[in-house]
Length: 359
Ligand SMILES: NC(=O)c1ccc[n+]([C@@H]2O[C@H](COP(=O)([O-])OP(=O)(O)OC[C@H]3O[C@@H](n4cnc5c(N)ncnc54)[C@H](OP(=O)(O)O)[C@@H]3O)[C@@H](O)[C@H]2O)c1
Image 1 (cartoon, helix red, strand yellow):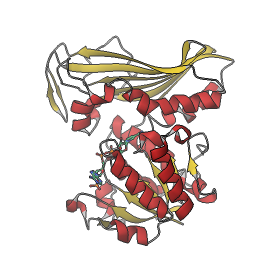
Image 2: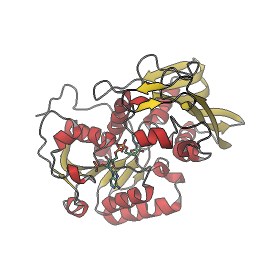
Image 3: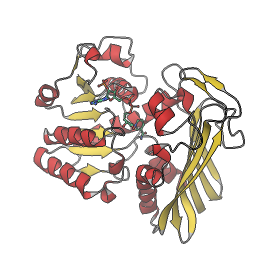
Image 4: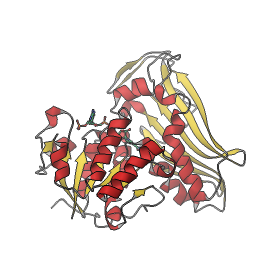
């Protein structure tokens, strides 16, 4: 069994504990938390499992790393504290762990990561013998392994479009929704997540991964952005009111330009309420979906709708991000130490999981 620690117990960390528990080759050995109120609580309770796991959460990073977990799912926040997250990950790599995480945008495409991020990671891998794989859903499998797999079914392929279409009122991250993305803010507010170059910082790596796999040269990466105000004040289930006239929907694209044309596209359509921007793409049903459209001959469209934690699509998306990462751990355990990306690591079937009950 591969001893595995989970660091952080938010949306991703909860799903990570459940995924490690469900994986036949992995054994959950530690849970690290930041919130003092979670110290000492059982991993089963923290992750929403209906049984006790027998692993109590700890805030003692040194002690947990001293137990030499073979693998570690880093699920603490990285977007709001990137330098600290990098330092945590480097520390775990230096202790020899295989680290998988969705938390560092710059390392989704490690070949093009800034040297101040890449170099300490490579040094820690050389010193400790661990490995690192950074991925998720979007950025992640929704714009690397899934579209690339589906592209292989086309005869002619003109455009590869990856869409995330979500109602963010289901996303349990009120600060991100209101301030990073700007839902409910006046239309002259500049949401940090949508500032020029930021979408490329987050999703540009995915465009480069797809271009590399498809064997094409990118001329450049461009961004488009469209925002719509709410026509009427709306009340959401978990985040209260959003006023008429404030931002209610956002649509942006990060475009890989090939021979002068946008041909590899990551598109996000995000609403705080279905009434806003009804003419923009919407999920067939429910609150969110990931979709791949291969424009060409034939035209191919695949929509993935994942649900978890009582029918929640955002939780479903997070759980699939975790699924991609946790199912890479045993592959990484058999591979040489290194810094890997989504093109290196195959998405494999759920070997050993079908019908498996917790012992
Ligand atoms: N690409 C993708 O597909 C994808 C999908 C989802 C999330 N993400 C990324 O994954 C990361 C986690 O997302 P999430 O939705 O799980 O966030 P979250 O629900 O806010 O959880 C983050 C956790 O980080 C820990 N934390 C907070 N402040 C900390 C600090 N100062 N020091 C150490 N730990 C701290 C807390 O865990 P404890 O108190 O429990 O330790 C918190 O529960 C984010 O960086 C997010 O951008 C990526």
